[in-house]
Amino acid sequence: MLKKFVFWGALVACHAVAHADGSPWRGYLALGISAGGDTLAKTQVTDRQTGQTQPVELTAGGGLGSFTLGAEYRFSEVVALRASGSYGREGSTQYQKGTFNSDTQRYEGGYSYDGGLTFTTLASEVTCFFSVTPALRIGLGARQSVGELSGTGTLAALTNTGSYSAAPGTVVELQYLFGKSNRHSEEGEPAWGINLRAVRETFTNKGTEFNADHVGIGLIAYF
Image 1: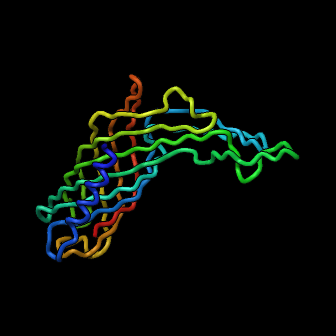
Image 2: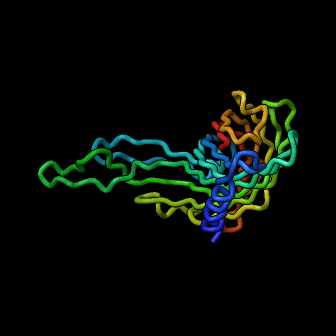
Image 3: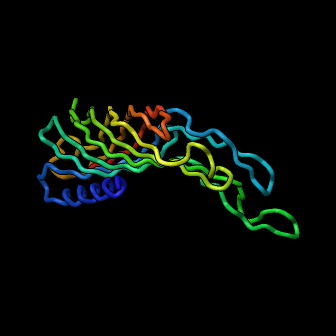
């Protein structure tokens, strides 16, 4: 249900910013990676062709690639409010059943690891930004997330796979925007830049809590 809410909300937000120049609304897009959080799983998979093992370690906030979509309303040259939804993913996608050759008694066809593990998250955020300079901005916000740890093959039966719920978290974000469009965003010109983020949150799975605090860096764009 939350997944539908996040992405329908993002689509509505993008529709709202399809506007004429001079509107206080802007669309927002970001791609990022992060690191941090407790270990959710630390194990290994085996290549059934070679017998070699590959370590697999997932954390609640580390190595997570994310895609974010949202909209921002600018109250003034100094203050703006952004609402966004994001999808994050980390893990092993190397699991393949492969094709077993009865003549060679081996699995063939690319990698044939005997298992795979993936942790995905959906998050919604509301963040208030303050412009320190026309290019430098700092934001403080609230965040709500859900997660899902799923395994395939030999890793499908890990005890902590399944859904992860999270208590409301907090976000601190620093942005630096490039180009002349960072001077007067109400002109509707695209702007791009980089951001640094620190997130504080906790996931719970089957009564066990996992610290999911993490830091991240990303590329951002306003349109």
